[in-house]
Image 1 (cartoon, helix red, strand yellow):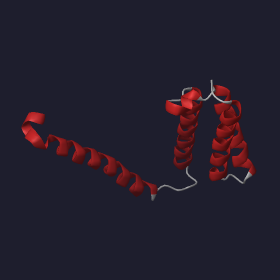
Image 2: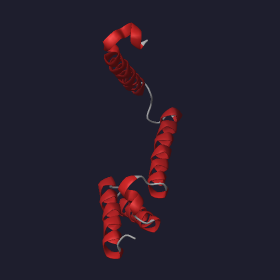
Image 3: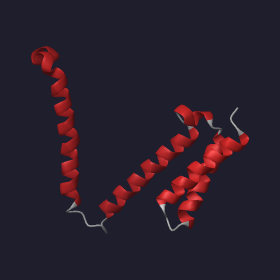
Length: 115
């Protein structure tokens, strides 16, 4: 395939990737207008989204990558618990939960240090 396109094959790959990415988004927008908020399909999609978010957060806590890997597991779990508590205490405010969780992780590492 690369030989047939010559030196233009990288442009073809970028255009094809863009068409696939934005094509799926356009399909989603067109379909979303036809789905009732109270339907079971909409609830199922919401459950999948929350499940993916929970899995990503669990992975960040249990199997971190990069700088987060240097923080002890207990500190990461404590930060997540404080973030969850702040989220519910401040009327489900995501920003408050994030600030509380990050602040807890920073405070614990500053006070107790890293090994």
